[in-house]
Image (cartoon, helix red, strand yellow):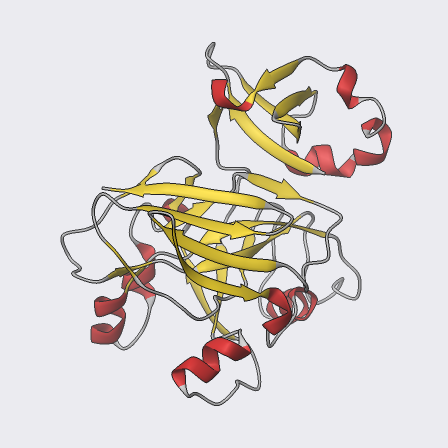
Length: 258
């Protein structure tokens, strides 16, 4: 199922399910709550009031405390860079303040001259996961664009500043369940031109391995996101560009650069 969080013209916020370009409203206050009750409504939601996608404002799908990111997690990306495959995940973080939704504007900071996009599969944490309970867990999936000031990353020698500007983490527009995350076409486009085109089967560490590894270090809270790394083909953005991130069974995440 594809879940979305949105606002209507009367400024009311809703959670719904998308099907055939319609959003069917649900009674739940969050996508995570809705997923936890999925079995009780999945055969009857089409009887609910619906909204048209073009008539609503899409919101960030989850409330989160952090975005945990993984570097160099695609075999074809490592080959592109002529780098040895890592033996364990390389982690960094983006602040919650960097998160924006589909359709929101990415702001090109004056501090950088080299702004890059990175198409990534996002893991959505559905319940608290830590080292004491991570033998089994349930997760969902979304789209993430790990926007990066590449020249600042190279200059600083560490990644915090280059990854953390406001608007540097577009997320959404949907959260999906019941897909195979390890065999999905993943791609990016800038102004309609394909830049990245790979498959999540090329990941070095699977989503399940990443959740287990990260939750052994830090508690993952409901709504937290894991950005699972990007395939080859990263390129630069300019003001006026439209960047699109796509994953086969999830959809597209599109943002304008200003």
